[in-house]
Image 1 (cartoon, rainbow, N blue to C red):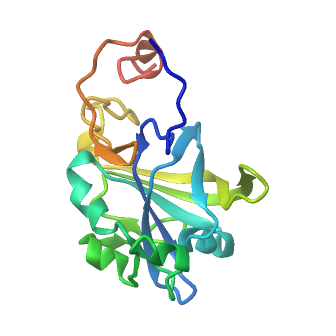
Image 2 (image 1 turned 135 degrees about the vertical axis):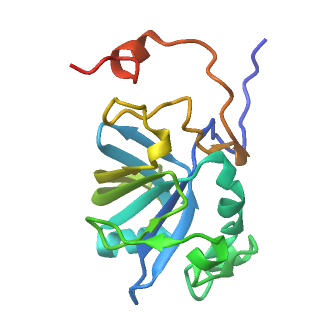
Length: 209
């Protein structure tokens, strides 16, 4: 039996992203977010316009989407309740956020140079996507502080161990274990439950011509 409810959050499982941007002084900012989905080489990010990250995106128009694997959950959690905004906005003070200018350092990760954008990549993340902002769309009601941020992926970096041997440019989904945010809790993936016929067409099983 189903029941009509009004849950506090609607967050049915999306990948965690560590998004790196540049602050006004050129220092890197690193923030966890998880409202992200991809279609081709485009990606839509759902974020609050009040965040430091969105301010950086408006100003510089570029970022890196670093995707952590499930075993990097402690890295992501170290960034929880931190902000690059100084002073800390009042609404974040009420949620016990603190100002932290050195996000890479407190997360315990290594910044490395990107190829096509200025913000650095996170070395430890198995997937790193360099991107530029295409458009920032208002999202929700007229008084909403949310935005849908459309970005175009410019370059993809994948850890070699995740690739299918002898098949160029195929990521092995059995090896890629993304960190998932499910109703504001961290989860990993279970093993594959059933072989997909779409996987035979688009996935690593398809032989290259």
